[in-house]
Image 1 (tube, rainbow, N blue to C red):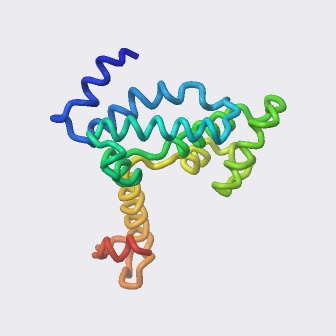
Image 2: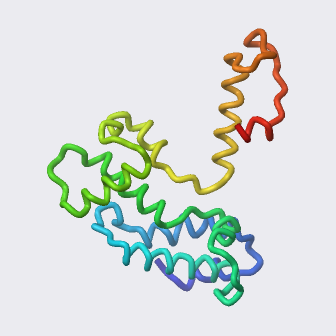
Length: 182
């Protein structure tokens, strides 16, 4: 990666933060997490990656630590999920591919068991690839959550989940905010 070209985009104040976030997700993060699927990662490594990523995100937004802006606010501003969540996603994605090919290294296996327990997953779930991918994927943007909500809303309208829907073809008007809070 040619850092001078990348830093020119990430430091440009004319470019919106969300666009910088997308650029970061496509260019910088893959370089940062290259090969992370098979790292027997320790908490010290996770902490260093988290700190490095937050430095870059603050730098992109034109903030410093002395501005005292919380990490969550910076992440929302650029539409970015935590590097810890993305590390877990990468490990579990790789684990889904290599299940049954031999005994994994002890420490890596422990990390996977922790990830599986944290997301309430089992090894047998890797057999259904589509379902596995949807369960381990970390949402980068709230737009994904809105799409999921709208799909659920459409499904409930289609199959008459609401009391005022007497047939499948009847239009049902629902306050999206009320439905979102459920």
